[in-house]
Amino acid sequence: MQYLKFHEWELSRLGLGTMRLPEKDGRIDYDRTAEMIDYALKHGINYFDTAYRYHNGESESVVGEILNRYPRDTWHLVDKFPGHMLSKEADGRLAFHGFPGRTDYFDSAADLFEIQIKKCGVDYFDIYFLHNVNDTSVEFYADDSIGVVEYLFEQKKLGRIKHLGFSSHGSPETIDKFLTKYEGVFDEVQIQINYLDWTLQDAETKYEVITRHGIPVVSMESIRGGALARLPEGAAKILKDAEPDRTQASWALRWLIALPNIGVVLSGMSSLEQLKENIELFDEYNPLDEEEIRIVESAVAALQERIPCTACRYCTEGCPMGLNIPQLIEYYNQLKAGGSLWDIMGGMNQIEKDKWPAACIECGACRSICPQGINVPQVLKDFAAQL
Ligand code: SF4
Ligand code: SF4
Image 1 (cartoon, protein in one colour):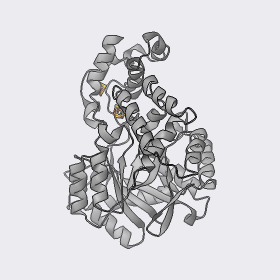
Image 2: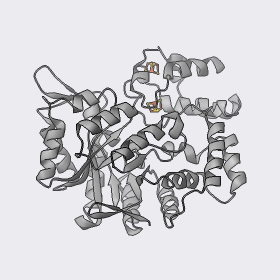
Image 3: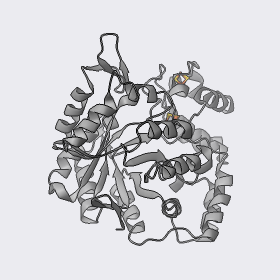
Image 4: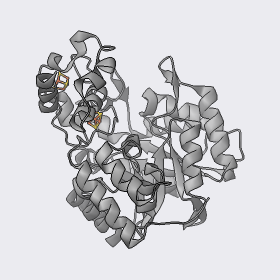
């Protein structure tokens, strides 16, 4: 495993993201997750990333419980404050809208933070992020009457947070303004960055802004929820022809570490096999060279046709028709990438007819929440037309 210096620590270059852990009967599969975390620790990973909302609140407690089997100084836990899904009510309470079918209320940021500390079974968080400071949530985070940043900075002084940071799907301007307002407060910024989003989501400008503020960038969606490991035929062929023995995931991860200000590379992993493959890639420091970067750029050109859904599922909870939006988009992408209707019908026939794309009532709820800016109702309309 490669390591990088981060303040007083040596962090593993590869971080284990816990938003897509293996599941059984709709809950986290505890045994398989424990097997993954055990393997990760034994093979040098010491950076684990969770969040209040992951797996409907289960990720924090499961990950915390498993990590706590090991000495506290052998792992670093990152957790996140879910301000992007909180609103301030008229009575001053904070309402959390991130779990399906219910709203939870908190008296203050402190209440929520204490719950997280308890769920994770820790006395302190190694790194604590504001979750998704974006163009909408930035107002909540910067609202002095709520005082989230001030409260967390206080916790840092008390040693309950060792380092503060934030994740963001926001614009470069929002990131810049926020970093300027809170200059010197944050030690890490996590953004969605990979070779496709470099241009698609302007990760390049975000990366430059954060670098200008002298802060390391943590990459999330490093292989785009697995999409960069399952490329459509055209892009896959370009990489395969160039280096037949390399996996697609290795191209994505080696592209990232070629950027000088990339710190930890996060990957949300769902199986032991994925974990093993990723760990192998980080055994040696092997960033892409200039020629390989050009090859990736050719693959990106072939990929631009694809609808860039990362299967984050932010959209599904609010869909009044109960559509499995990322799954439908995946089938549509297969169709767009040259697959035939025949190819996708096996999967489509497993879906109830009233959950097919034509059931979309174009309410737009998914569109406003999608961090990838996908016009979901239009995509489903196009897909329905083809079906
Ligand atoms: S626009 Fe369609 S897919 Fe999106 S939330 Fe509304 S009904 Fe669901
Ligand atoms: S459509 Fe957008 S919000 Fe929904 S799963 Fe895909 S990327 Fe996530």
